[in-house]
Image (cartoon, rainbow, N blue to C red; front, side):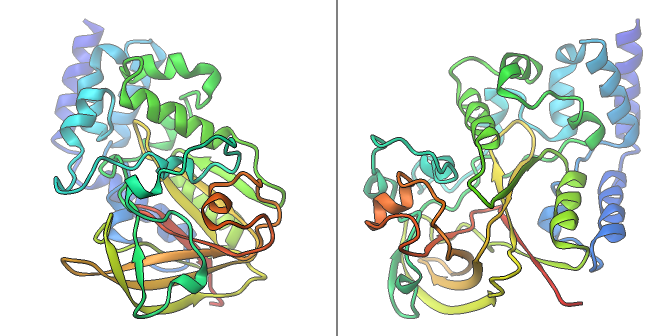
Length: 340
């Protein structure tokens, strides 16, 4: 009877949810960030759950009964609780190859010596030198797609109750209905691995599991007055594009920006880090269909990076000898402090 009452309650309040959740995110944004509106694509990632829905799902979680209502939870929270949900909801350009496997590898500084250099078959350079990005030059662009671009954050009240640890990975998989050795299983393992790796010396790192945590991290590291930058689209993925205008948009090496990379997981996760001596550029790339404005981050202090980092394998130099640049993928975001 209790389950039935909860289920009926969830169906009823779905009709009244409207934009309450997005409005709550917008309000939190206005209270903490120094400009009035979050970008639409980021606001769209706010949890669609109302406080009432979140509270009811919290009760189910506390009673270990959430698995009985998993399809409803997945639908209303806009998250991927199973491999079936992942297959049905992930929509990509059918002319492009599958998601590149090194999209996660490139975030790992501890790359084993025997790691294969599969750039040619993946269709682009994940790392490159600043001098390679000049107007009129050609550049093989890698996969810019987010493997799970549609997913939303969970409300902080729910996300904080989920044990985000590889030690409890079996509990995580059970909670979200993930099958062993599935693609989602692989995503969860990879994301936990990235989030639990030790930072390099001088690097500030966190994985945020809610929209509020993301804002809190940015405010703590950069202050309330910030600006954010993101790549416009995935156009140019796997193409040999022509580089257009290259514009330096942040070059203060004494005040590092925060880089946040979207991670594949049942709900939205961001791996955020702050590294010293980073410049940010906005680059026009002329792809087949249209011009895409892509954000490029260049790291000028690589002295603490692991000698086995993929960048050094590709570019033929070691730590501290060169700067290393990379594109910011779909749903990635760069935060820079402002003088306002």
